[in-house]
Length: 433
Image 1 (tube, rainbow, N blue to C red):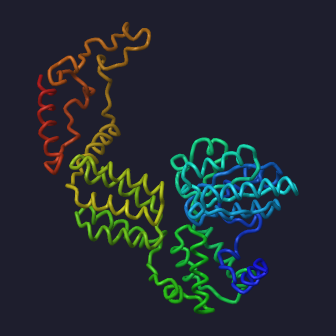
Image 2 (image 1 turned 135 degrees about the vertical axis):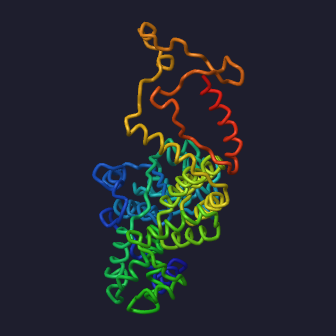
Image 3 (image 1 turned 180 degrees about the vertical axis):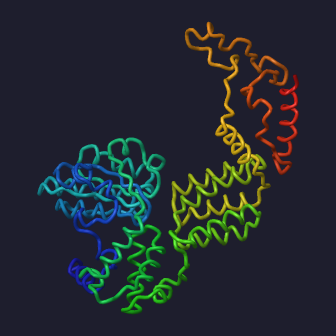
């Protein structure tokens, strides 16, 4: 009676659009082309009857659950999903016992899909080991976090790790257009204006599930889906921002110049505009890393550390959480004392090299390790600085043509002030004849 009631309830409650549009075969999957080609592990898993254990690692909405479902559907295996958020060791063992029983009685294999597997503690992950090692199930674990940090080594070593990539704008566009036309989706009952389509693509941020959720919400309001309908449905204003056009360059230019001008509020505004418009957070992070050396440099050497850490954090966790790391770096860069001495120094040095001011490396600095170098006089007369007071000794380091050239001219800003004083003393000492 309970099962009949549950079935009736499912029929009475339509499934969400994202569920209805879930691909049924690998050929219907949009994106992840690097995982779906001939001879790839996923193809082998679908084409072979042998169990296989996989970890699917990637940002939300990239198709981890979809791929697990497709494997089960195409191979006619039982599909059992366990959520690491709510399941315990008892639930894991019960799922494995049922899979073994099914395998023994009917020979039918089971796909055991564990969503957010990184949330399992060590004991829960240990409970999966016998099933994986003995191939009682086809185990597929999905995670948005680096499995090398969140999954125990014995489990990871017995499984293939497949990395999913964020869906491109073209991928999301194809997902939405299919959902509008497909009988499982909106079946052509709604029209999607081009501007509304692009707004949904931006809002999705590479997440197919989010794009379909927003499309479904908009379709509930109107059959003719415009930008205004989408704005009302998801309560997010359309940010007028063309990632390939003038606005892209105008906003990133204003972003850099606001940090350079030490206006943290303005810089955060432009950061927010880029994030809300769906700008690639890795692009933003790269610009901050460049800024940290180009506009802050030695005035605050820790600024580059913060920028690089933010870039790594964005790569590791993605959005939306990564926006906090980006904001952290932006505030640090904006509030740091400024110096462009580093970029001027390398620019001047490269300029001289391009003019032909190169010259020979002084003989005493040349490599003296290979056989025959001593006969050529390489290394003769080299003075080892650590053998002298303060680690300094007068000798020629630069080629003669550029010996008197000055490249690094530190400012008196922030942490570069004491560097400037030390460099002035060192330079005077080394240049004295």
